[in-house]
Amino acid sequence: MTTRAITDALLERLGRQDADGVAELFAENIDWYVPGDEALPWTGRRNERSHVADYFRTMWPHFVTGESTVELDTILVDGDDAVIVSTFQHTVKRNGRALRTPAAMRLQVANGEIIKMHLYEDTAAVRDAFFDRDQPLGAGGRPARS
Image (cartoon, rainbow, N blue to C red; front, side, top):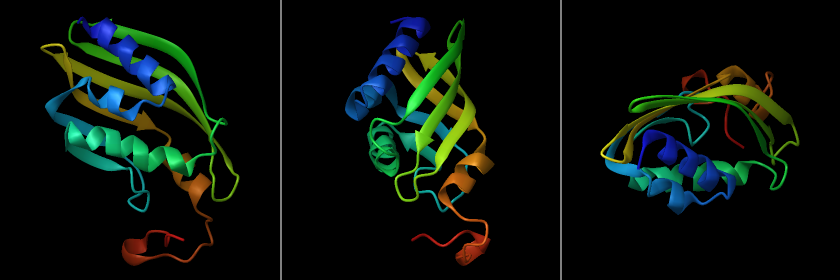
């Protein structure tokens, strides 16, 4: 499959919230990075295909079902690299706060599989949607999970 075909398949499977289908597009060993507050369990690095579906199964339940949207702005493809530029909007389940953030997802493909996925978004907006600024801090100066 071409980089564009894999990118389109990724977007289609994400739209269906098909965590296993998304994972099938990734190589066994990957470079995955989603920066953000360490108190959010889906942020950080992952390095195996088996971690991909778990990422989505961990993140998706934190948002109100049916209230998430993605506005796709641009898809750029250059050889084995692709960048998806979009805007995410979600409602946080635990407090009802709306979250809207521009996002860019960088993909790299090799041998018909995604080997790299880095997500760039407004990590402060994500954090602020989940935690109150006056919320007590836990270990490491991070907001305590409730």
